[in-house]
Length: 408
Figure (cartoon, one colour):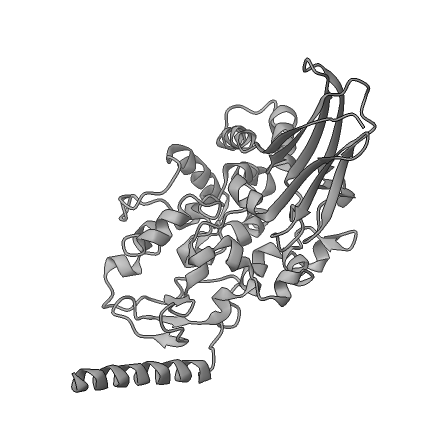
């Protein structure tokens, strides 16, 4: 018994020493230029690696990283090479299209070589069923890597080397030797909000009224979440889950907001507090959130309606212009007051509707019914049609509550 107890103390001591050494080690961070035209396949993979180790398709990664793959395949990252975007590419040309791929399919190997490569990709995607399957063909019949959008290799592979966060158990940083694909380099950079900035923080050169078109990192820095160390990953990758949930997910949005409904004299007062969102709500220009109030009599007859929009509305007219910005800041409390209430008002119903892709609905409708009205059923038009159908399905009712009005 003493011997075993001694062994336990030795093991515990080694664990403590290991933790101290890890804490004292210098975090290698990300290699220079990690997000500057990232190349996952530059050079040659080690000759001794198996075909599976050399395959950077997400389905290949999913053979071992099953939990991560299953979460990722249903995320917007997995579908970032989206029909609404690529349907616009033939009219844009290769250079401008590749600029879009800097975020939607960032690896150099995912970029278009020429217009023929682009058109072939659009045709191929039409014939490829939606979604990703671990049982998919990983050989010559596999889809091009670009079709997987923001996949595993986009964040984790450079020059055939793997990078990732420190292991949960040890928190160790630096090179971690493993039997598969030469191990990996562990760095805390994967746990920091700055990691997401390459795509979710636009440069000042894309500012409208002093605010970049997407300003998420700066909004986060100005919130209480930054000072508390609550990062993007805390909310969008809890427990390192690769779901990347956002405004398209009603449950995710509900967790970030607090709702209150009450009567105040001859008015109904509905309040929304952005209680657990570390940036503006919504953070980007594409969604619109609509708050509706309806006054009704005892029979249910509608007496009056009110409506408010929570949105950053922009248009492109020879340059980007901001029409209004009514979004909630992180931590903001705002009231939506239905007043004065008409005579005979018996109750007031509030609804909150979310249209995650409101801006795109207008864009796609314009492309289909105006610019592309005289185009035959080309691959581009078919992709836009599919995109419009999808974004319409994404709208949802976030909140509905009715309050009975009591006479003073």
